[in-house]
Amino acid sequence: MTTYADLPPADRIRGAAARSLARLPGALKRALAREVPHEIDSLRLDPDVRAMLGAAELAGREKLGDTPLELERKRFVHETVAIEGPPERLYDVRDLTVPGPAGPLAARLYSPPPAE
Image (cartoon, rainbow, N blue to C red; front, top):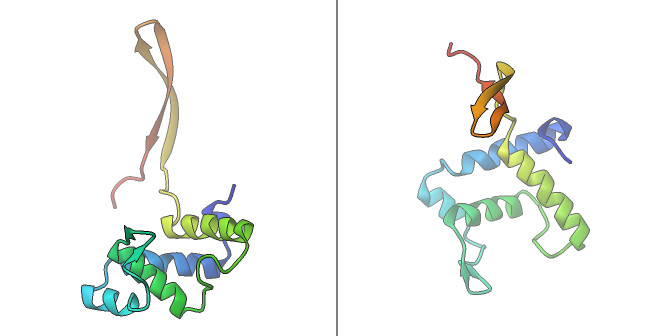
């Protein structure tokens, strides 16, 4: 399983750039997506997805379907992990027990870091 920590720095940077695409003004998104079709197989593409595909194409990425399926799958996993970004940092993890209808239940409490 690929984790964010496994990604090379270049993939992390590309993921951060992809996350920032959603915050771009609409006109810039449309400019990035100008070569990407509005529909694929009768399905309408989301404007953010079109902008992301357009930006990837401008960056020199091969078009979807131009590489073997196994490489496409691997690339999809890497890109998905990169776009999701680093996992939320946890401050504390505690195992505990809570009452249940048939007796005690094991539970785990995850706490975020305290606000700064």
